[in-house]
Amino acid sequence: MPHLADDQTTCCGCAACAAVCPLNAVSMQSDGVFDYPAVDEASCVGCGKCERVCAFKQIKPDGCRPLSAFAATHSDGVRLESSSGGIFTALTDRFLRQGGAVYGAAYDHAMRVTHSRADDEAGRNRMRGSKYVQSDMGGVYGALRRDLDAGRPVLFSGTPCEVAAVKAFFGADAKRIFLVDIICHGVPSPAFWQDFIRLLEAKYGKKVTDYRFRNKEIAWRRYSPLVTLADGTTVPENDLTGSFIEVFRYELTLRPSCAACPYASLSRQGDLTIGDFWGVEKRRPALDDDKGVSAVLVNTETGRAVLDALRNDVTLTEVTADDIAAGQANLSRPSVRSPEADTFIRIWKEKGAEAALKKYTRVGAKRRLKDAAKAILRR
Ligand SMILES: Cc1cc2nc3c(=O)[nH]c(=O)nc-3n(C[C@H](O)[C@H](O)[C@H](O)COP(=O)(O)OP(=O)(O)OC[C@H]3O[C@@H](n4cnc5c(N)ncnc54)[C@H](O)[C@@H]3O)c2cc1C
Image (cartoon, rainbow, N blue to C red; front, side, top):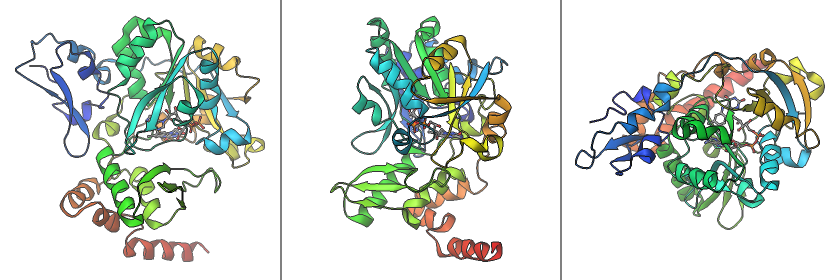
């Protein structure tokens, strides 16, 4: 029997092991917080393919540093729809113009975060905006294989472990996929996310059809969510809608493997790495208009060629990798799981999502009082 997730810190949930099994003996099963592979002993013939494809254990950073680094900004309109400076839109536009396919994380009809494929702008636009929740990768491997077989130009974007998974799954063929990894703080639980969405739906009496983690109408640096309901009305940030941001930022449901992430370094998995240019106001103050600046690390010659071709679409300013790394803890080390994470999860499971949020986020009176006291002391 294969050993796939004996230790939760060594499984990033990429689902490559399930996708590679020729007998469908491996499936992803939730332990109530995250998905892990489970092996059906009756179907497994012990071929070992699932163990060999495990990128998290086998694809380690090679120690190379980025070739170059840039600050990138798209038009104001695109930046308003994007989390950072909009470089993802510029990159994917290029592939769409060539008749290619692009892959990234989007919401499905039930607000689950799922890696999906798009070959037009509408599909790609659903991928815009960071969703700070683990994305379900289960469907991408077969779709990518069909695009490669059809000879289409393909761009895949995801967290570094998702990019490593695509590399491990496709081997030499992965060279034909343009790979973009994001600087990654780590992913919260998709099961908690689902409970959070159901909580919002109960509170507002309508289905949630969109949750924008970062409403750029408010600001770039401030993570201010905007919820859209089924009748088209929107709910701006309040203590409840904003509380999931705290779950993400304070690592209250961080995936155990994220705290042991082997990819949290300047030695990257993608042809390009994209993220927020945190600290741009100190490093390149002239570029900062609080509408969002992307940080771009160029990791391969292919990455360099593709970025060069975008010079008419985005403003690129050369910086150094150290300029970018200065504002990014996760380019040198993994995030740390909150010491409260186990209790948070226990309360969630025993008493529900709202009870856990009340105890640990600003939904609760205790935290609100603490925040108010801090604000007074800062004056
Ligand atoms: C879980 C997570 C943690 C992050 N942590 C950091 C960080 O610590 N520092 C930092 O600088 N940037 C981080 N980012 C990246 C940042 O938020 C932006 O996604 C990135 O800068 C791209 O912004 P953009 O303006 O180019 O385009 P956008 O149009 O906003 O790009 C969206 C991109 O994010 C991808 N994406 C969205 N949600 C997910 C998801 N759940 N899983 C995988 N990919 C997803 C899309 O596929 C697409 O590639 C994180 C993103 C995610 C999803």
